[in-house]
Length: 214
Image (cartoon, rainbow, N blue to C red):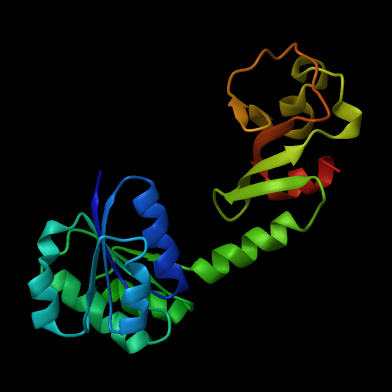
C-alpha cells in the first residue's frame, strides 16, 4: 500500500483518487474548490480544502510523508507549475504532474516534476486505435510503434491452433494470453483450437496488427 497525495479534484484527479482507493492505497486529495472537496467525501476519507500554491498549506499536510504526489490541476497551468515546484522544495519523494501540451511538459520537468502525463492525449490515442477496426477490443501503448492489443479471434483462425497458425513467424506478432470471458489464460496449450468467443492478447507493431488482423 502506498500513501498518495492528489492535488486537484477535476475529472482526472477524481478518477485517479477513486481508482487508487479501489486498489487499496491510502489517498489524500486537496482542492481549493469547496464543492469538489465536499463531493470527494463520498469516496475518500482524507480530503482538505486549500491553495496548493501556498507553502504554509502544503507544509501543514506533511509532504514528506507521501510516496507519490500527483498534481492533477488541469485548468490553471501557472498553479500547476507553482505547486509542482513547491512540492519538490518541500521534499516530495516523487511528483507526477498533468500536462496538456509539450511546452507544459518541459516547464514541469524543469521545475520539479519527476514524471509528466497527458491524460487527454492517452485517451485520444486509445479511442483512435480502438475505433480503427471492429476486431480491436482494447489497446495499451507500449511505445510509439508497439502495443498490447486485445482482439477478437479472426474468422479464418477459428478452429485452428496457435501452432498451426504460426502467428509469430508469419505476422511478427506474439500471442501472450487468451481470454475466455473474464478469465485470462497465460501459457495456454498452443495445440488447442481457438474458439470464436475468445479474444487474444497480442503484442506487436501497430501497423502489423492493422495489416494482418482484419
